[in-house]
View 1: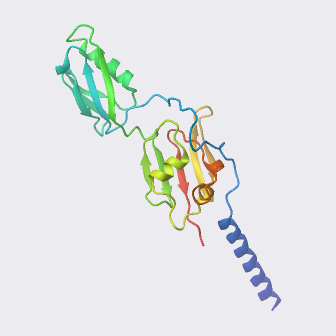
View 2: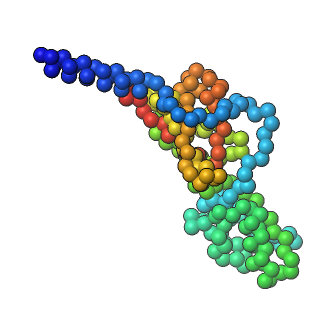
View 3: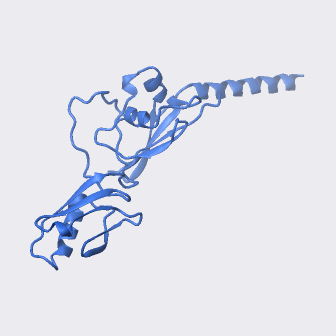
Length: 213
């Protein structure tokens, strides 16, 4: 009988600990809060061309050498006189310079511009939201983007999401290491807690677990 009571007590204790873990938020580092409405917005990092981006290549005084193209899945584009030019991983100005060098073989001092008409960005720039959300997705990063913007894009939390146990994974360029931060998505989306809204960076991954209860 004492052994049965001890086992029963231990089982109840473990269940209570598990329930507390599921109901509470994870402990760990958090990012500073962001404003719901930015008082002053600044430019983000230089845009890097990704697969399936829509581009317009314009060559001044030589319109026949320009084109509207889509970056192929292999990361290359083809324009008049230029075949299989690598585009992925370059900024528009870098790609324009490469095209200019190629066209210099045919015309004198070409002036080339590259405009991004429709963008997806590289995987390293996209924001990925996975787990207990209405529609997990990978979305293009925009300058001054916040967690609230990302959650609106994926339709918010699912019914069984443990929002306050969500994690943000970010690659820190300074240290060259991956870092994790706590997110309080439940407080942000269900309670309107403005301090739970944080700024995102290109390449961030948001992981939302499901509650066990």
